[in-house]
Image 1: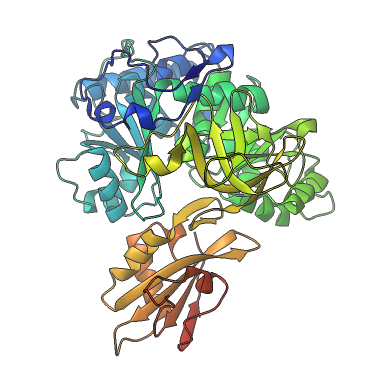
Image 2 (image 1 turned 90 degrees about the vertical axis):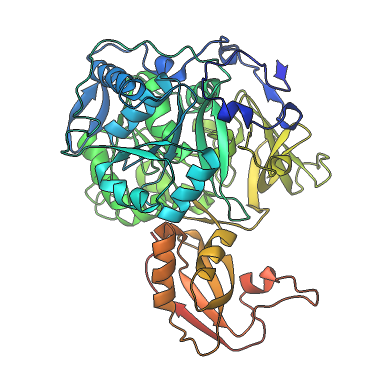
Length: 555
């Protein structure tokens, strides 16, 4: 069942900005709904669907900060929040609502309430800085924000015109959680299945973030493909992981998938490798989502006489790896140490979650896997022609979810001839397995984070001493790649790498900060003035004097 363009159902949105700024129909990818479970009704509110089913007393969210929430408590809290949003705050269907804070049950409840009220969730990272927040709010025309009181400072500093910030988790009488409100059930807004439910921002190679618009049916489709057919969760599973809800990897793994399965999730504010291992034992986590970098780091802590370094991993049965390529050596080391088979996968913010993967006996270390049921993939050349098996080319994907950028000319680059081009180079083996080769563009992938070099360059250029800047990724065994910056300073300026790193860290999320800064007299360019990035990646320079500064942890 192929749908090449929007179905054009009657929208429930009063604020039509998002729908009005979808790409024109001819620029949509071809959508396929091959599986019967993907043929959703025309009217669908995904938050209401996710909250329907499990008994009131079953656990849904665990947290180190307090007792577990039950499904009954979550439903009541979401309904109360939705009433406050549509009453006190005046939010109407179609409004974009920014969500910001660490990963907690209340952030998850706010996300569900926003969607149940027919509004559009724009979940951002608690790490992101004022300039980044301001840009995203400008692109999506956000006028409402729900923010954890502990993460409000940078949002306030962004000074976004017309933005109404409502905090939660604080002591003020107007705090969202302290406002008086009705406890009566809230009837979900009767959204169309193709109404926009969320806008997820991803870094672009030009440095300007791209807003990926996803529909109510898209949210369920990720659960009804990868989760249902590859992960195959049980209702007694406890999900946990490192990605925050601002990443679609975390949104699926920590919220959508467990709720769709009637299971529960452990939501951790701090979810690095050091926190994950004890949390697995303490909360009997059975399904884990994190990046290869974290699995490698956890292996270091699993040394000991019992092979687990004293950590009890007996509850684990599923471990999902995504965000960057999973080396075969990491897969084998994890399997040897734990007996668990890592489920590798590739996803994209543009496609919401994982679309190529394999589990159990179908896993082949060193490959990503095969197309998830409901998805199709091929490898093609620059002209859009399929290449023979065994030959590298561009990965092209289509399925029930597709790329729809918010008013962005880069839609034509990502979607060509009905296929989504992910920007990855792959080889399709003769037996249908897909093997990752490299990124096809200048995106830097470090410890599972996508980092656009031009965005970091722009931050460097905001420093008064920087005349020119170039940023590339260098291979790194532990992190996949690290960010390396090359800077040309104004005459007489002091070459102080640490000071410049501190400046960038104040401008951007810490994980985007260069791990190394190299000072040059001039950047390497062609005779026509084009920057020769390949010379920077391979360690070469312009032939001018260079001075490197390397220091600090990349967070």
